[in-house]
Length: 172
Length: 423
Image (cartoon, rainbow over all chains, first blue to last red; front, side, top):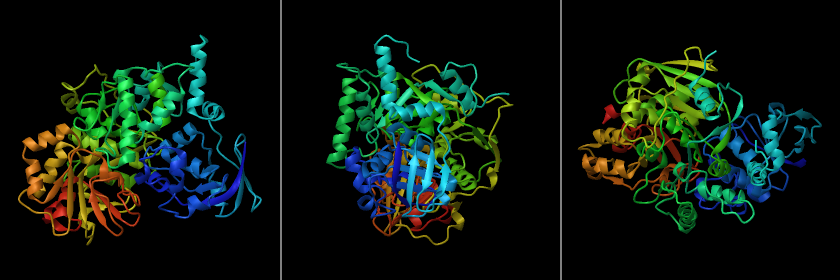
């Protein structure tokens, strides 16, 4: 799976209230949440972002609340992937859970500016900055997590196991 | 090599002799928790797990807890509809532990109080402050809605066994210093990402002497240092709190003396003054006495962090016989119906009303800028809640200063951030 788009760059500790303010948590579909994505730190984002664009950020991206609305809002807005120096753990879980591609690479973050074109080969964890020509290797997912990612998220992954059990086959 | 508390609890729930930090396990979950914000997504994802034509049941109705607390009592039509989704699901699945307006509390005040979480549990909650139950010696972690959808269906959840930071607090606490001040100071020391992906074990003489309320406050904010869980060993204080409430038998786990820690932090708690965390990160903590002149428009006393009886007593001891300053809105929110009733019987609510404060039914409301005290542009609040991110309590150009209940009450009187000794 290849993702290609424009870089939107942010700093450290982008919290989930910044990604989707709590005042919009009275709805819960990606479509309803998307128009408010990043609203309080980058008011023009939701309107200007294009399918496949990449959010690039510093340390502890997605810190704060457990709201799955955060990766859902991003998916709804068309965000193709998030590349950060590091992720807060619940956000990391949620992104894996809902199938939003996320990668850790400090070098890719340092080498990217807003507006650069970035290409990501998710399967191999390769990040290419098409504007500068630099290539980076992201931290690989642990094998267990790669299985969830390849299944398309935690629900399809679990459903496959449950269905196997329903058919009387052995479930791990 | 010995094991940390987190390693022991996760090993027992994964059916393994031992586990080590970094290992992925599938753990049995004792309690699965959702609220009116996170449960609607979880319910939608749960339904997707059903087989063809099947009506999927939760793995154990006794173990699934749903609480309408964030935007309840319903703040608008959309919030009301989200509560309907959760209420219907609770009825369909015959969930005995569904808490609605009139019997509810803020989830992390309510669950320990009702004996729903006991020491040694693994709790998966679709709310980041689920880590609160670490105060009881449970391994409790905030997860996403999809995670609890899976846990509701299977009773199991994948976990990465976390490394542990052990933080040891020495010395006796100064007057007006409580769990909130200890944790704000600690986050100031280690940073908002200082315990990212890790567990924290809180220990030492100052912790041994700390009340259960103080421990719940500290564990609650472990997430604000990035932690997955914040754990306290079970002792006499825990047992005195849990016995008589626990709905199930429980097990106590202690870290081995030779457990392997990622980091050891020693803190002289006797040097810690009442704290305030400045906008826009909880790590911006400093002594309230060093706050300078920071005028405030609103004071919020409550939340899953500081909405328990001891917190209301601390606030009332400052507000008794005094009045909230001119132009300040002081909002007091008891954390549960039980806390509300206890505060009523003790006369605390009368103290608040006479002091010019508004007293609300339990709700998360203003903490996340939902309702019951949303800030306008340029307004400033001192709040006993847990987050002061930009826009957290309302307009993106408002500000939140985090503090314990005594400092919040003193600030409400002074009209600016104040140490309780100043009023």
